[in-house]
Every structure is written in structure tokens, then in C-alpha cells.
Image (tube, rainbow, N blue to C red; front, side, top):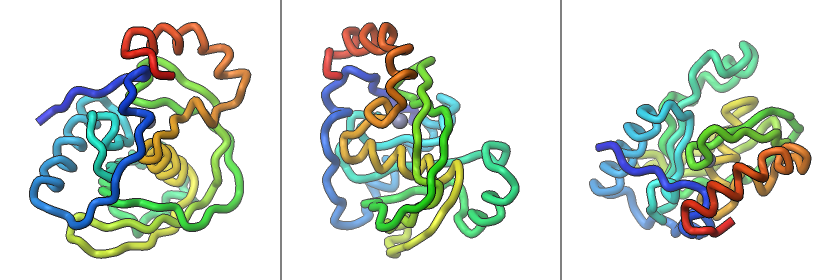
Length: 181
Ligand SMILES: [Zn+2]
């Protein structure tokens, strides 16, 4: 089922998610609906808050053409789509520059500096605890989505100049969706 995507301005995007005690049938259903919603919107990641939920859950599917060959090789162990319950970044290193967008910010992009490599702990859909180290674009997506689960949005971390450039659009979007920036 395709869910409604919450846009910037909605207070739920600023809420922290709550840890999921166990992976249940209902949560697997939610994860599958979130993937369907993300694909329909042509996104590469989606967090629970973006569909108005507060469970600690995000989904990611990075298409191969978004990554360079070296990163793709490094990340190959991690099967897509990536469904993570209770994800937490436990280590990060390096730095990468790049443009970022978000399904909660239609047609807005900003430059965001991110770590180039992160290690993330999470619970997989089968209930097993995982630890994975990822690089490049996938590392960027993992940071973006785990931020969502903590109520942090990419514009909070974006380069000041690019936020300034988008400020008119950002204010308009926030105003139309509840006013919470
Ligand atoms: Zn986002």
C-alpha cells in the first residue's frame, strides 16, 4: 500500500523515533508499505517519520548507478533493499561532499558534507542483529535516514549557502505543511 509522504513543516519530522522491541508482522507490513511508497516516489530512502510513524525503522535502496565502482564493490555484501530497525551509527570516518534531496522536500536540493564511511548497527527483518560498514552514496543514505529517526533533517546539516539559496522554497513548503521548520 502506498502511504502519504509527510512534507517539511509537519511536526512529526522533528520527533525522535522510539526503539522497536521486536520485529512484528505489523512492522514488516509497514516496512513493505514504506518500500512501495519510496519506489513510487522514485526515492532511495525513507524513514518512518516521513509516513507519519514513530517506530525506529527506515528503508533504503540505492540503485547501482548512484555509486562509483569502488564503493559498489565495497558495499556489495549489503543486499538491497536495506530495511533497518533501530539503526544506530557506531563509527564514522572520512568526508564526502555532495548534493542531497529528500522525499519530504520536493524539488529542493542542498549540498551536505557527510562522513564517507559509516558503521551501522541495526536489526534486520528476520530479527537478527547486524553490523555493516558502508561507503560512498550508501553511507550518505544511511546517515540521512538515521538522522530522520532522530528528528534531524538534511537542511540542518547542509551548507549555509545552499540553504540560503533554497530559503524561499523552504519557508513556503513549511508554511503549507504545519509551519514547523
Ligand atoms: Zn529524507
